[in-house]
Image (tube, rainbow, N blue to C red; front, side, top):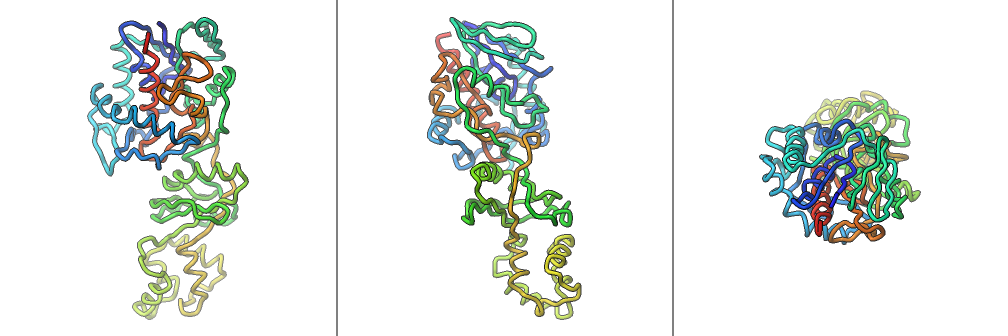
Length: 400
């Protein structure tokens, strides 16, 4: 039995290892000149490869029931797998990293196991077509391969410079599968206003809330980056999947920023107290004690306030709103070039929940980002890559 893995990224490598047995031949077709290019970029090169809190609330899919079943089957196998291939991990706030803090440790461990199992990797092989007759006929830019089973692990359209340009979607559609619209996820958000150049470069801890059609959706807390086009940062990334979907559905998407999350009382009351404490201070001098000067200047510009105005002489509600409820309307997300992952893809209800085998084409399996699953920052997308890769590989080698 010959099993072909199309794609040598995170899920593809794990699928290959999991599919190998003494009775079969496993080989990988990789379009790049080497495997794992995208894996090396994860966690800014440190590879946050798992999170101990594997809750469904950290994932997005149009079919969470099937995703939950995948968790039940594979979640407890991930850490033992990496321990078995030599990875010593360290944990910080629930985030798992290789002890060396290097993504190369994960990739090298996977490739070492691939080599020990005598799994062949053919690089610079771009698959252009797959036909299913008695077996699979796989055409690449160089030659034709044959296989009894195929595991499609080509990734999504995110960060195409690493080789994931959506080619796998076209292959899947040519074999009869449908596609939930693919949109950027874990990416920055582009606002509608014109003042962003005034706050460009600010990094600050805050709370951000997402509103759709004026209805609260979700809140995130952490550092954000204020840019010349809108907002960025991990907590913004975690909202971007929902924003992209909402924009596609023509919903009004707004981000509301609380720049003073440390203040546990009404900000107006707190500033009243500050004014009594700082008797000779004007408003700008009061704000300089806790707010970035660019943001102070922007608020003064938007409200056309004189520099020496005092807190007691202004419309307090408007200033309080800037501090705790600064609202920007979102018109778009950054493109696939800037997205870490995508949302959408092959619907989970088109695969067997227990094997990830296609319900349309026998002996065809899917794994990783090509499926309609995306997660928040924090090791969740790699977590799904490992779980789905193991499940597809284990299933593929049965009866092999």
